Image 1 (spheres, rainbow, N blue to C red):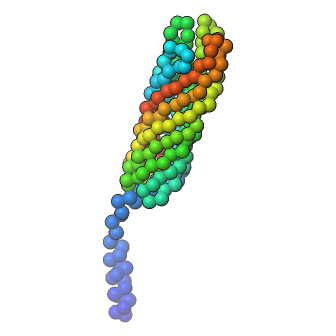
Image 2: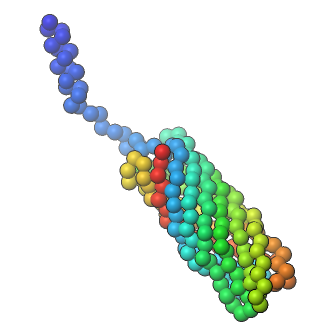
Length: 191
């Protein structure tokens, strides 16, 4: 009888005692889905125009975590208002996307990372009423930071450099491509 009372008291005491969490208890591992809002500014090769504007899109990714080190893959697709007109040329970048690897270091619910991968997008030229579109492939690189504010939600800020290569445009009579910088804010939900 005494043993039953003693073990019952220990069990009741354990219900009220919690062990403090380690500092790096937040896990960045697993899939996530989110939305982004960016400001884009760039330069068209072999032309004087510099398209700029707002872009927004969706992103998805997956992270693995080993201790403080986080690595994964992310993809995004964006609609863009970036355009520039300098008579008689008008260039715009109506959409673009990336497929990138990410690697970073986590400090609990805060992560700093670098990213590198594939970029693709549309470059549209309009010269004297004639419009021509080319979808180009290129590369992207950048860095950013992300902060989790609940177990599932996080916010991020990042800078990316995009190089969408170049294509031969008939309406300009030359090869044109787009290099651009973008500053992006995003919100992600982790599953």
